Image (cartoon, rainbow, N blue to C red; front, side):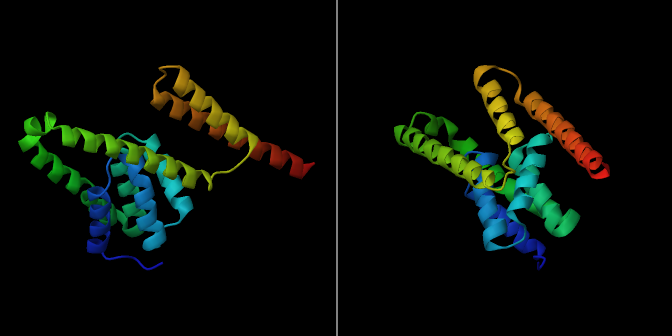
Length: 188
């Protein structure tokens, strides 16, 4: 894998940041397409791992993902320029919009545009989940965790951070028990 120049890394993440509406989850399919399919800087498995780490660490998903991907590709400076690239478009757009927010607030056309954007973002998120689920380990344990977290999230107001942490601890415990059983079976 050829390491990209820092300016190329910055521009790729600037483009990702500039053309993504709806936050980190909506950004993931665009990031996956750019980083994996177009540039071949990482694999789908890398993106899935980075998504899990980004979701499990404090901060904004898009920024965390850009930082981790940049670091994987080019180390410290890669993380710096990828993060700068993904954040800068939002900063510029918000700065400009803040000058006109009162005029936009009452504009029906802008309101309708945002309704359409929300629908598109929902599809982007669904597409990202669908693509990433193909790379997921498929066994009974995984399906139980997915179903349990979905039901807890849907039916309770339990904080999502706690759900992620508890699911991570359950995953670690399951992995340790599974590995212990394999070692015991090998020695018998």
